[in-house]
Length: 146
Length: 146
Length: 146
Length: 146
Image (cartoon, rainbow over all chains, first blue to last red; front, side):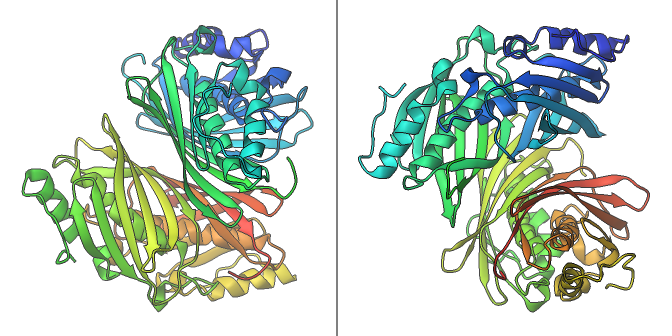
């Protein structure tokens, strides 16, 4: 899943987040690809599969959230200095639906870092640039693994 | 997926939401079971599979969200009177992690209905009653299908 | 502001929250009255003054939030065991407008307590019971005063 | 309150939002000043008064929210084309406390516009640039006044 990584850090934090992303079974099995993995900036791509459709025939909001959350998870761990960081809460807005075959790109950017907390904005776009989801995630850096 | 439905309405709204739940491929493929499907009150169950684990070795937040969102989606459509309702935004708090093999239950309750909008609270618990996720969803009733 | 307190605890936590509520200059100057002050359950009332109206001629959302936040603040400190607790983030939904002269009642209930974190739901109603605001607040218990 | 307006539109939308801001009694009485009023971009300033302090001796979160909400309200009406827009829900994160005498600046930026809905980000900073509040507001454009 990490072949597309455009930039990777060689320090402890960079190695820890790369290991975490490579060990993310859920994202790998859904075909999620890492495009950019920089400190505080992560981009991931996913194609909407027929298995992801809900009862309205559009992509289940859970999979849109999952893509955004994967990018958020990598981004908040990319600035955790080798410690583990986890999502504490997220606010997600569904702007437009995704359909089977759509190629989606989630871009996560760190907005703020304060104490053990972080605030990240993630935007999910279709390949044509249309915004589908706006996501804001709060992270907490842990003193011990979850 | 609907064998466990404890209560089902025979009116147009009840039939529409049952059809929607049965057509929800994403939820069915993940083994999500409907336990209660009443107007404004929906309970669904899911077992955490090894394929759902993230890079910390715990259940990916996306799957916890997806379970809550499925219960929310059925609940907001259960009171839409046969029209389609969709999630417009959600706020999710991750309280405790879930592990492979955990049996999770999401309970969605309507909190408020105003104009075309609805507000629903969903709690995801482990079988032992421990709260793992608190979710609040805003829905919008559509005049035409999504 | 505390004459209307229906129930008050005599332990350290109860005394600390009563002292905090009595020292809340902002709430007192706006005429906010405490109706119930129990551990995890607080009710406060406020009348919408002409000075609280915005450019649409209705009560400024900031004052609706402030009333809910005061009830939340007392509620999260009422279960902090004498330590100080502060709001870390809040999600507020504006359901219906308030007008000058409306008597508003905010009721805060603890939903969850985990580690140093708490989750509280606050509903603001008009005296006739109409829901105007739904508020969900996340609190953090501090080890030292803010 | 509008002397500091750096940029103002001469079209119907610009006139409508200027009239709304000038009629905002709540903001004017708190000394809130408009610094920038452009379509989709609004900056407002406020000094923390002793009357705004809570029981911890810091600025009540309600007043921090109110400042952000005033900037948000002007920003969402600045792009409503002369119609009225109102806040439907907001997510606010309290990053650091404000104290009496602090000069605060709230900057609201439109993030997204879709259908009758809008998404705006507001950051409240102290004069030294320290971020105190991150706020995300959802707006709805009305067909008739609130």
